[in-house]
Image 1 (cartoon, rainbow, N blue to C red):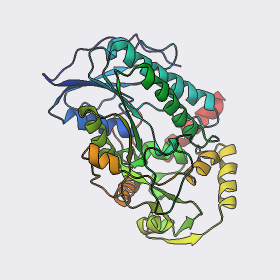
Image 2: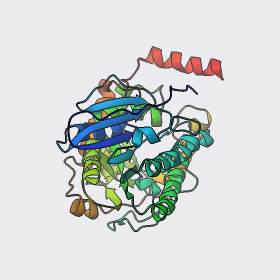
Image 3: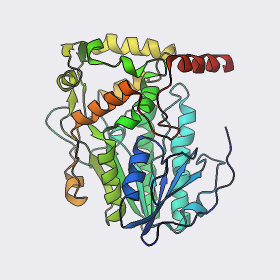
Image 4: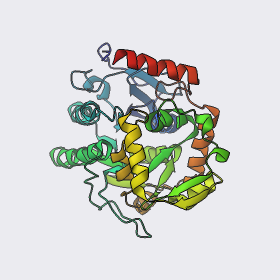
Length: 368
């Protein structure tokens, strides 16, 4: 693992206003949150923390490369004097080695929480997820923030999101002076994150340009395939409100309509066809075992069990309302796939050519 130089305290820039630190600031949600904060006149400065400093430079923003894992950089000097810390850092891969994602997501997350307390930061906004929820209803009933957050134990992503919910339960009792907010969004999409999400879930060998309506004639209608999505910029608006307003607790974030086979077929200009889950899961499990796709069959199982969320609390207490439908968010993501969209940050780097992806895979094989 590459080690960075010890983190140094950076003074706020941009004049008067609140100082906000964003951990995991260069990915799908992080870039949207940093942009939203930098455009807020009540925010004086934003300090973006990530493993690698990006070329992207929004107003009022400074960058610092940090390692949040155990033995990594001291976060306390970076947090000291901040009005809020927004924790977004998350590692999705390698799904074949969950101990590695645990080290970043759980142990790194705990280091962030402890540093917030040690630095005397009054507010912590944490990126939880719909994935933290226990299995629930898929029909017209929507669950609110009181639904159990035990996740789906077989999938690393949902297991880790649920574990951090338990950590924060204890943390809030130990630090009642800190205003803790837990954001629980549905699946997040935007055009610039398309290449990153393809790499995370489909793998590097699938060219985004192949994801075209004419090449996807059928969308499988699987039992349980009904989930919620949201544009990343809409999620960022909720994060910005959570930083500014004196709120606490959890907030569900989702746009309409829920994504089922009918809606997805409309997005792809395709038709839906009922299919049993077992053969689809078996095909995914085989591809995952052969390292052809990074998304594990356990995550597939979890997705089919996620409940539908009620976002009323966010709308009422954060004065929040999504500006994009879930269908529009997915459509923008697909457009980004086809065009090779991205941003000048390491996680959102534009799509590579097929030759570059094959070189990358060959290099990994040689290193194995």
